[in-house]
Image (tube, rainbow, N blue to C red; front, side, top):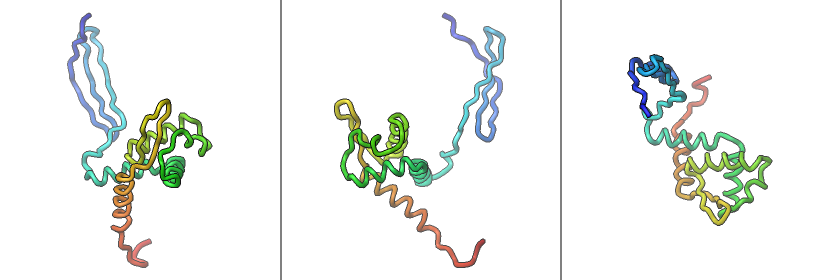
Amino acid sequence: MRVPSFLYYDLFFTRKNILIYLFNRQTNRNIAIRFMGITKSHIFTLKENKLAKYAKALGHPARISILKFLAKKQACICGDIVDELPLSQSTVSQHLKELKDAGLIKGDIEGASVCYCIDEKEWRLAQETINQLFDSYKGKAGSCC
């Protein structure tokens, strides 16, 4: 099996994409590769990225509902979450994944199910980070629109 031999010849940056143009020497054809959804998160501070991660996790009412349910129970919940929401199992699983990726919840596998609960350390950190943002504004009455 022969590995294709490519010749790199051009690179373009657009506002949200990177385009790489290659030339395949075996087939004498040009190939364009587009990488989409490029973020510039590396130019922001770690704290700003962390806040954005929390905001994204909190950006859907189903995830808010899941967090409220877990906070109210104050215990690890196995499987009951789907019964609490008017959503399918797969949709709830996607929301749980977002919350877990943000660190707000943790999940442990117990037998055939996964048990979820609030990650208390990350919960406190999220609360502190979000409060710092809101506390940073010291508005003056009548000074703006």
